[in-house]
Length: 400
Ligand SMILES: Cc1cc2nc3c(=O)[nH]c(=O)nc-3n(C[C@H](O)[C@H](O)[C@H](O)COP(=O)(O)OP(=O)(O)OC[C@H]3O[C@@H](n4cnc5c(N)ncnc54)[C@H](O)[C@@H]3O)c2cc1C
Image (cartoon, rainbow, N blue to C red; front, side, top):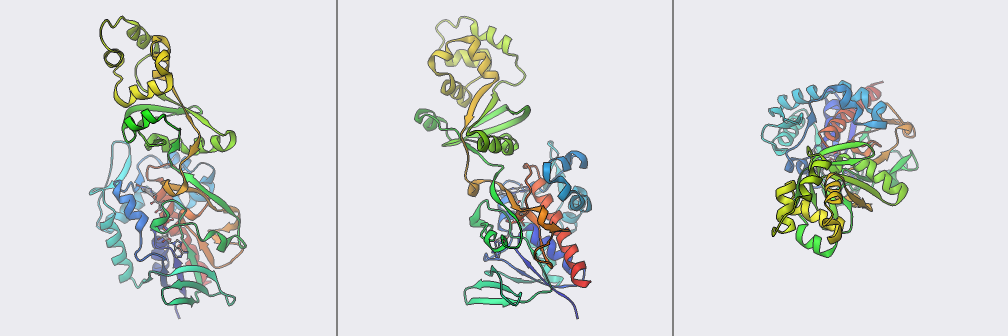
């Protein structure tokens, strides 16, 4: 008789675990609290669905920082090129952009998810939506809340892939944490790849909220990240901010605030800038002078005024220095619900081959595990790779 597996959570990690379990010949039921699967994956598709990254595996693995030892074997077993081949098998062609980020050719998630669910159903996957996992009953069966009341299901092996805590309206709301804390250690979920609060003046906020600041370089703790960021109502967000967000968040937690330096004129040298700005500007306004002498206008000029005030703007040396290293004092990360992903989750200490030592036969995968990574495709790669590893290990455990 074939062994029976339950996968709880129908995001990329859970679906990949289900695929691995089916490939080993297990009967698989997949449960999700939401009315449909893969909602966060579909949301990722709105940004083009950055599936993975083309950089060599060594720097790729380094993106997982302290969690690397716990993810490395899984990522090596399902590396970026295998992920691309997997997408290809689903009829989704991928390409590497100039930054090395890998996307589906049509930048969409829906065709990939559709093809994947079709293949999984054809392989026998039974899908149960609107089933919220509530923990275990005394007899070890799984408890689910449904519109018709509570239902219980027994399984030989279970993979939990319940996601982190960002964008809770898409399904992963972190409500699973109290269900696991008496079985294993769970680190509190925190915002990762998030924006930050600064606290703008009302004048600056009204004029510039929503505007991009193009071609800047953001620096913190010796790391420099180029790119475009966005002024928000309360502070800043966007690619280069996310790239530094783990270090910024940790520094704010430790010290109450963190000062980020922004180079508003990369490629230009401070001394030269100072000389150009010191040239008399006759009847021209300071804005026109700033634009002609330093190429600074719009939101960049607004940022300088916000930080320097009128007196500081009149001093060309100070102005040039600030163009090259505008200090922005960040006082808080944005709430977890707004972040791209979360840090924290099930601690690796309590896992053996992704199985909970405190609950043999139950495996965990995806963003609910305690790791974090920058954007760039590293999130989905780790979710898919740990989903696959957890599914494989669960299948072997169920059979033996
Ligand atoms: C706006 C946005 C854009 C993103 N873009 C990218 C990108 O381009 N590239 C990238 O690599 N990553 C991206 N990510 C991150 C990526 O989508 C996630 O890391 C990934 O979806 C996590 O996969 P997962 O399977 O672990 O969890 P999820 O995808 O969160 O799935 C978890 C599932 O578990 C279900 N669930 C939770 N609790 C229960 C319960 N108690 N009972 C039953 N079911 C439950 C949820 O309903 C959900 O379906 C983006 C995220 C966001 C928010």
